[in-house]
Image (cartoon, rainbow, N blue to C red; front, side):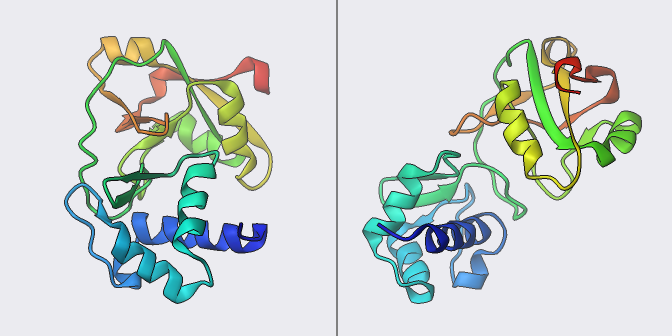
Length: 184
């Protein structure tokens, strides 16, 4: 097993390459974000002192399940800034979803809603606890936002869910947002 510090570095590199800069590792993603695991392994092992088994362990043991490994191909489950089609199917969301963010972002979000920014979608959580974990990665004080997903969906907005359970939306307009009273 890889030491924790190295495992974190390798995981961050994997995310960077599969989400944002495949060319930085000499890789080319297909239209749905997949790349040969053999090629990916070569790129990772040329940069880090890890084995194929170490890479598979990072994928399988990641609590966030950021990567999908299927039929000797790998891709990131979501969070891409490169143009890909994850081939997600629209699905009906739970009635309420959540989004954890920095409290400093709230004034802008309160005026403009949640926007995908540099990503393909806004990332939402199915429960408050996951949103809190996401929020703690932000700088400063945090806030958990409650999204009226049932009303959004009934009014024609699409939702998707990635392979690792992250809920995705194109945007979340202001009228569907409120600070979660239980988390302030």
